[in-house]
Every structure is written in C-alpha cells, then in structure tokens.
Image (cartoon, rainbow, N blue to C red):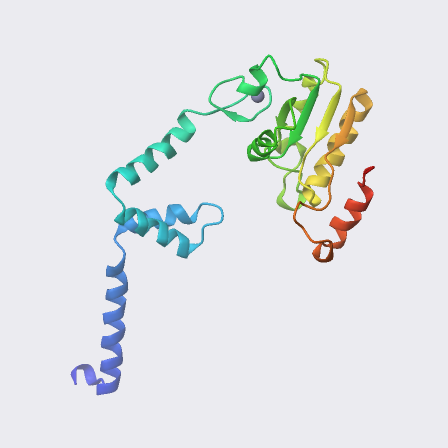
Length: 221
Ligand code: ZN
C-alpha cells in the first residue's frame, strides 16, 4: 500500500475523496444560484427552492423568460401611491383617484394584500391607508418604520371615520391601539373591524380568544 496506509484506511480515504468530488460535481453554478435566490423568498425552504429550479429547467424556455420579465417589471412598473401607500401602477392609485369612492372613511390595513382582500369583499367603498407592517418591538419595528405619520394629514380633508383593520394578533392589536390613541384627540371616529368565528368554523374547536371576542362582538339577530 502507498504511504503505509492499511488497505481499509486507503479504501475509506478513496471513498471519501470520491464522494467529495461527486458532491462538487452535482450542481452547476447557475442552478445553485437559482436555488439560492428562490430560498430567499418567504415560505420557500431548500426543498421547494430545488423543486422550483428544476421545474424551470425542464419547462419551455419561454416560461422562465416570462417569469424573469415579470419579476424585473415588478419594481420598474409599480409605484407606491403617495396618498394611501398601496402598491399601484399609477400615482395616485385607482382608488385614491376615483370620484365615486367615499372620502369620509379610511380603512387602515397592514399590507397591500389586506386592502385587496377587503376590496374583493365588495363591502367597502371608502379609501385605504396601507401601513406596510405592524408595530413589533421584538423585531425593532416602531411607528416610525411604518407609513403611520402620513395618515394624520389625510384626516384634515373631511374624514369622519377611521376603520382599523390591522390583524387580530399581538402586533396588529398594538398597532390599532397606538393609532386609536393618536387619532381620538382629533375628534375623528375610530372603529375596529369585528372579530369572531370565521364562516364554516366549529364553536367546539375555536380557541378561547376567538370565542371571547365572538361573544363580545355579538349583534342583534
Ligand atoms: Zn392610493
């Protein structure tokens, strides 16, 4: 045996080198780059990132080209509305620029997707204000990190009611309370969207917090 290795040791050493080479040869750099970029997206773990990358490798070239163009245009073709701070293609956005919306009511939401969900409910005809987050001291997100101070000047233009539609979790509640304290002295009515059981839910399986809020928010029937 060369260098005095025993046969077993030499065999183990060779296998190790063999596998090390095999691993290095496995993923081409461009593929590894794509996997790494997918992994940066929220909710995408290493397995999903690999699956998406190899899906695109096997899909027709037009598919990945269209995806690349859509991602590139995402930043180039969108703006933040300077009134409500929702993501839009024009400034002011369609809602803020509309002549038929009720300008006396503003619904405050955490994220653009929240405004979209509320809009799809066809139950609200006022304007929105998008905070882009919620107050979360543990993550170092205070009121100054949100589009919150921009809400106050909007209230001078005949706004009668501000509806707080932040999420019913600790951060959303803290944000709602902060805004309520900020706005109340200005004489504008502040309301909070109702919380309770979602449609299709069983009372038996609902958590205590949801049930207690459902009882608090009960209405005449
Ligand atoms: Zn807007």
